[in-house]
Length: 313
Image 1 (cartoon, one colour):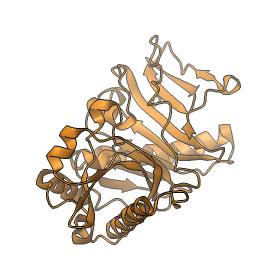
Image 2: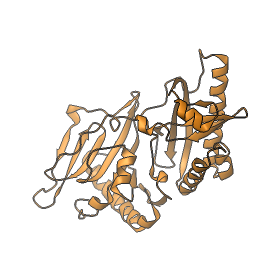
Image 3: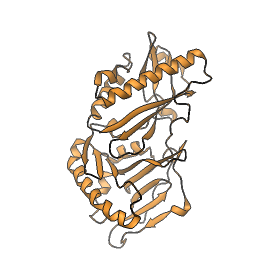
Image 4: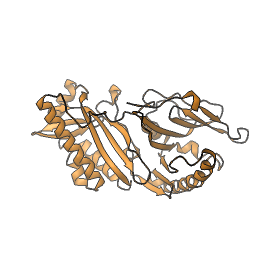
């Protein structure tokens, strides 16, 4: 299980010339850091924000103790997801869509857009784990909508950005699998959002992603923000040397920055329902199973970050 831990000994408050600028950096809120407007506390991390699920430990790749039919179904789903991950890495659009339910045309269209949105992101890994021992129950109305056998086991996606992620980011995928003519497909990824079990979203769920990078920094955002991405990449590149003088060099020295187009998009990406109107940026990491941190990200809130001067940035 992944958790974002709060360690009282690591809590740090730094006021950066508060009389001269109107921002403060509050670090140590578990593994979530907020760059906020001065004199207003950061939002309290919600239960969802406080953790993203890690891969099922030992259960994502085995079907021990399952009835034969269920084990065969789990094996078929793993094969489907293995092909899907390979197709994405190989830029094989037809192969990626081959695993999408032909009876769900709207979802299939969205999946095609998702594949196109990811085209420029330099992934070193994109894979899935499946835990067939944990599943969500289907409702009669959902079954009637698909008119086919359904299954929603626990699924996580794992991905690494080449040259920047030492360990993969792990995020929950709530996928409805549909069986048609003996073949399993992905039929939906949003069936359980109203039940409080959403699929984790990334920038690529909200539009095409473009990339700006330096030796130390990669910034991901949408096409209309490309100039801003390039500026941020340079700001981070210059800041890393300054930070290392204070914190030392016992850290990777590389940064991944995400730039949503809107505050609403930021809220959906970090799964935070609280007011973010005073937040300039959020830094997150995942602490899974006692392992080191993974999936470190700085996520910018465009309207507020743009108010920062050079010192604030």
